[in-house]
Length: 468
Image (tube, rainbow, N blue to C red; front, side, top):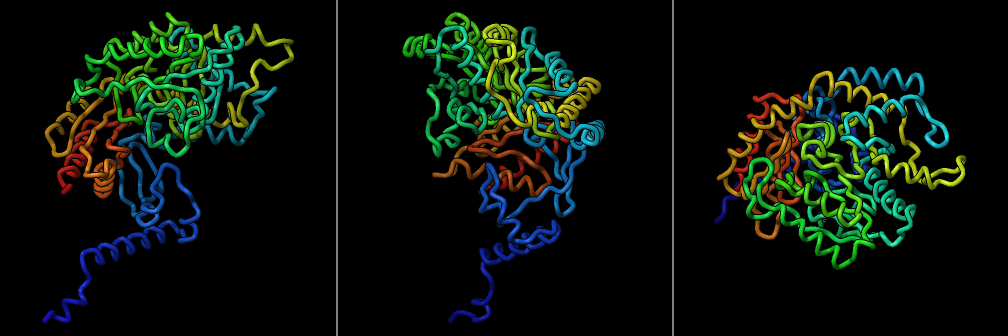
């Protein structure tokens, strides 16, 4: 006969539920939030049901660390969302923003402007490869991509080739969340809910078996650009407006380009009179150890998209940078001088407070030599992250600059489960790491110390080994 006391004891599951509910109550109380307030926020790119049962609240940030609602220091291994390479809460940016918002809090961007918008545009062009020197501001990377796609189509209309409407993206590519971005993007989970919006096709990604556990740029894969020649033969160059790629794929799992791949891509686009767009929302301003991915890999596109690090993540801002020739085409075919050359823009384009933040952020990059520091710290990250090779479930590791991706073998029928479990275990240990699909990603702050790299890699390794 079963002991009556035993039947009243909570099971492991009941005990876990009680713990989760207690932690949730403590978190809400510490943040002075009600359940109704928690429920009201429909969070982006988040498992809302899971999060609202186990909320993870960040209440402050300084340097390379967040502070959570329990007062714990959380190491920021993704620089926010690839955004805060100079570290959090930089006083130079705070002071610039405070001064600006008390002086000129908003300025219309249509038909009028303010001096800093021109100062910043020129400042950004100084970080660009020669020839990329005309900046159109947006408020996000997604808008920057959308702007580049519209400009590409409009350019071909301006030069009398309106049939050039097709775009070619790449599998595993991420280009934001607007209709154009999800069309040229190549991550299935980001596309399947919405369907196709633009006329697009995709190239194969370069995370091929021959490149597994490669350190830095892989030596195999440049031949994959031959597929672009096949697509040009299929669709004809007269129908293709542009090819868009990330020089190094970030959200798709940190996939560096093979040696010679981007050079070959540039050659094919030039040969067939197709525009080349680099999405450098993640790679621009230091992530790969140079001012841009274009500079690092020695290839200049016709259009470039930027965001994130341009303000060190403090205020939303993005931009599209065009070659002089493209800008001149719009100016020369713009009609009467009082007519707008392109009917496109955003209410918050070149927002004066965002411009102040960006100018301060770019000064920090230069004054503190953070781009050079990013390059100098990259070999240490490479050495440490590849020490995880041979750990259970680790099927691949990739790295470049201060970015690394670790692919985990899928749990049966659940490819995203193990990265989620590892990320939650890391959170418990005091480390914020990014999980998405079958990958754990890192985009370390440029101010990172070697001891911090050691600590986060050790935490990831321990968390993987703790999986059943």
